[in-house]
Amino acid sequence: MLISLLFGIIGLGYWIMEKANRKLSKWLNLIHITLTFGGILIVLILTQCYRTEIMEYDFNNNLTLSITLILITVIFGQLIFPINIIRGLTKKLPNP
Image (cartoon, rainbow, N blue to C red; front, top):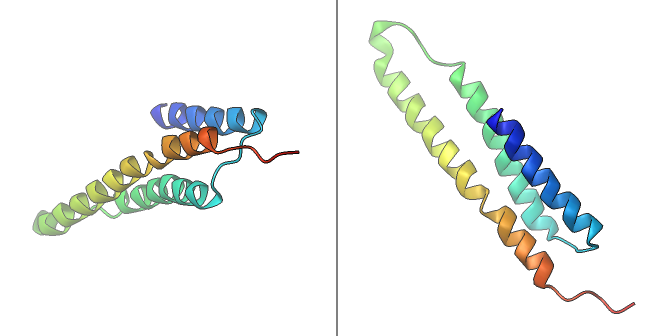
C-alpha cells in the first residue's frame, strides 16, 4: 500500500509538470525511475534468496546488509524527484 501511495504521488508530480507545460530533465527522470523501479525489483528478488538452514546465518546477514544498502540508495534516489521538479519550475520557458 505504501509503494502504491509513493508511485501515486510521483506520478501526480510528473502529471502536474506535464499539464503546467514544464520540461523535466530526461537524465534526472531516467536516474530517478531506474533507482525506484530497479531498486525495488532487486530487493524483491534478493528477499527470495534467504536461506533457512542454521549454518547459513552469515549468508543471510550479508544478504540483509545488501538489501539495506539498496533500500538506502532507493530512498536517496527519491531526492532526485523534488530536485527535478524544482529545476523544471525554475527553468525559463522558451519564447514562442
